Length: 183
Image (cartoon, rainbow, N blue to C red; front, side, top):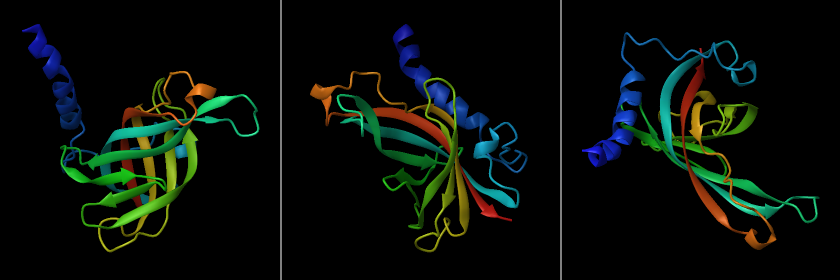
C-alpha cells in the first residue's frame, strides 16, 4: 500500500496543481501584483496565454572567464514541453536562443529584460521582450513573456573543477510562462 501511494504521490500532486490552476470563464486572469517590479510587464498589455513549462535545463562545467584556475556551471539551454493549465500540450520551449514554439508552427524568441530571485532551489523569475513571431499562428503579436512560479532548474551542486571541464549535467524544472500582447 505504501509503495502504491509513493508512486502515485507525484502524479496526484501534478493533477491537483493543474486542477487548481485551471482556466475557466470564472477564473480570474493572471495577476502580476505579487511579482517583483523588475519582472512585471509594462501597463498597456494583456495576458493572452498561460502555460506550464515542464522540462530540463542543461548546464556545463567550464573555466570562468578571466579567472584563472576557477570553474563554474554555465547554463547551456532549456528543453521543455509547454502545456495549458489542464495539462494539454501547447508547444515547446528550447534554446539557445530561447524559443517558444506553438503546435501551430508559429514561434518567437526574445531578449531577457530582467530577472528577480525565486524561492530557494528554483531558477529566477524572468521578463523577456519578444522578437516578432516567425510564421502565422498563436505567437503572432506576443510582446512579452514572463517566467514565474519556478520550481527547480538551478545549477548542479556537484563539483565543477579542472577534471570536470566539459561535463554536462541535466536538471529538471518547471515554470509558468505567461504570454502578453499589447492591449
